[in-house]
Amino acid sequence: MSIHINAQNGNIAATVLLPGDPLRAKWIADTFLEDVICYNEVRGMLGYTGTFNGKKVSVQGTGMGIPSILIYCKELITEYGVRNLIRVGSAGSYQKEVKIRDIVIAMAASTTSGINSQRFLGASYAPTANFELFEKAIKQADILGIPLKAGNVLSSDEFYTDDFNDYKHWAEFGVLCVEMETSGLYTIAAKYNVKALSILTISDSLVTRERTTAKEREKTFVDMTKIALSIT
Image 1 (cartoon, rainbow, N blue to C red):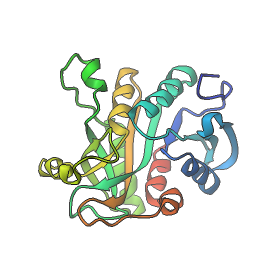
Image 2: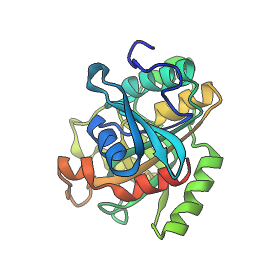
Image 3: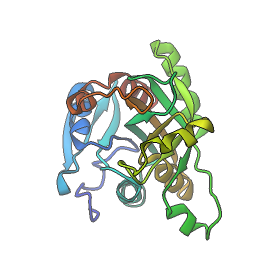
Image 4: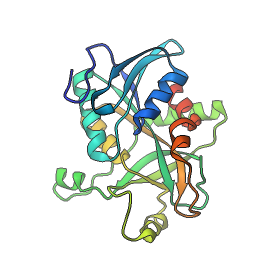
């Protein structure tokens, strides 16, 4: 057991899907996995292990923000031997051509967080996806007939900013969308020499002001989950 995950040794697979919402973790387990066990309920951050096409896979809620996902990734990697971490999360579009329910794969993650600035003494570290997982996701999406967009995303420390139009500056530099975890995920994966990929579904648009409901975000983001499971 670790501080925030009360699983026994062997309960967690080498590959873990990481939704921010623990209820999305439950939905993924109930919808896609067989022979499911719930290995974690600490702080309501649900974790499950089952099989998909005969292969063992886990799904663990991480909460919102870089500090939260770092806690769970650190424990998954160092206490439970996890080697592949695949975020399945929601994001807000920064570009007109990136529409509601589009799938975005984060090749790299810019951030407003100060964590890496502290870690690298003011230098700028560029967290990137694992190429092997990225390549597999591109191929599997093509097989599944699911269109993708890929590029730079922003991992923001703030959900509500003082100036709504702040996003336009990032958009001018080609950032596709905003979320709150990928930069932390890619950085800790690099530190421990494990593989990480962030697959995102656009839940809202800062350009058009469209948005999905909380229930839709919990239970209807099917395509990114199919891609994630196909590369486990």
